Image (cartoon, rainbow, N blue to C red; front, side, top):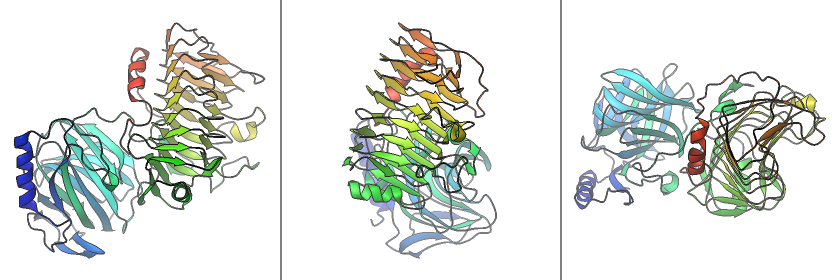
Length: 523
């Protein structure tokens, strides 16, 4: 892609004249630069040492590490757009340094920016007359010498930051409505390539469409919250494959190889993949995300965990830091997703389950620090098991810390969830309708907080004990019941240790039915 700055400006003007930026129009490219023409015409710099050189291909290099540095381009009248670039930090001079992309630039001291920092975070920030404010932040593994794709979307007051195609940060801020774009470093040398500025349905990873900025913003959360966000077991939060490369797979063989590969990796699932049954292992530091609205896994399931053994404390090599999002599961012969053997920091979000043999998501054998959010269980039977056996207390007591929120249990039968041993299990802001057997069961001295949920046509919303399992503890508060029973509670449960904000139960049905399930986020 050769740079054609003047041409892009003419095309952008034509788009505005023809009114093609209205909702539903195709993306318009405002600027593209891969520096293959050997120059940086149209860019103005402030600080640092900027030059076009090579790193496999032509790149725009900022080689200094003794100050902050910026390179700016574009038109002050640009309003709603996405600015994207490949970024490779090459050296950090000190701690908490960064490389960044900039949007709505007013001057060299006023703009929005998405910064990839050496302290293993990505930050969405505003710099206003030289004074910075953090708008949102998320954990991401950051290493010098590694390429990352950063994208910052600005649409009205909505700001969204992506790393390698995954949405990590978002905020609302109305300080500026328009401005130029740029690249920046702070006491960091870095290479930049493939700068792209688009309006409308701009390209996501590998050129696939992402959400139009003027459309409804992606549902929350966009970074792991709940128990998956807690710093524990030598893992601070859940970032999945962030910091690693991105691969797009469309066959069973490529998928199975990718999810088991060592090291951080983002695996994008394209189309429908028919797996041989029953289960396939997922290794640590993976993001598995559906591309678009139709990505489907059928015929097999995902196993997140080491082989079963009798160990009673978390092993050093326990599988950890895994994200599964935006996938449809059907026809699984065992479980759709199984989390076992002290696996931890797992985020399962915005997926849909339809038909299968056993569990939709089972979490067991000492696993912990798991968040299951914004999923749609559509008519499934054995839905979500937490703790698999009454005799497994040695592994499970004091563990099985799971958050279930904003899930849609849609005409399911049971296990929504069924809990053994887990303590401070947090079930909040979920919507249940037309449940066949029961909603939630707390057994074997488990401690479950049932908060702010919506129950409609559910005769048995929640109870203590189940089958041969002894009673657990259950605290219920602020739930809504429509043509439903009122549930059975008893005992006390300690408060969870993470921050959260629960919706009023009267708002939950509308939120969950509109936002839960696959196809609601960009992959």
